[in-house]
Image 1 (tube, rainbow, N blue to C red):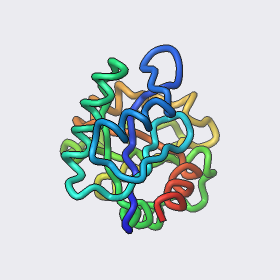
Image 2 (spheres, rainbow, N blue to C red):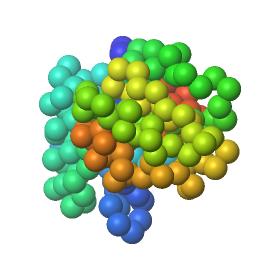
Image 3 (cartoon, rainbow, N blue to C red):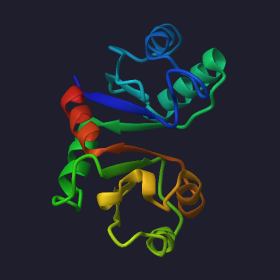
Image 4 (cartoon, one colour):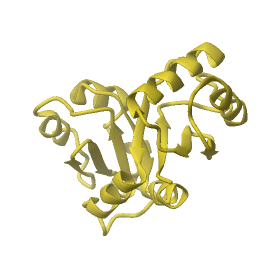
Length: 177
């Protein structure tokens, strides 16, 4: 059985954009065709059997989340093999797991996006686009000191994305194996 992860962007378990994971699992099992649904941590990682039609599954999950929780969030699909390939290709083997992030994009980003983002990098930061995954090493300052905010990334890339640190990416690989 092939397994996948559906990644939600900017959801929380309380407060703004609240999507409690236990209730989400119930809703997805009842309202979608997803099989063998589980979640990993409270930041919107849905593990499931690989859907026959991933784009349709992402749309159904998004619709179910809007209907149940009133939160409209992009849903991005990655198969186990895609996660493995992305992690193997990640360009920062010397970076710290908690500071290296993969931003999984819904599709191709706008031409010239990476060059525009490079102009905003702090001295310790690096980024590389590999396929539809933007790898960012936030360096010693971490994500809290960067100028690569969600708004800056969205504007430059022209496509939705959601980031996970390298530690989480590796755990998702394990969970989808």
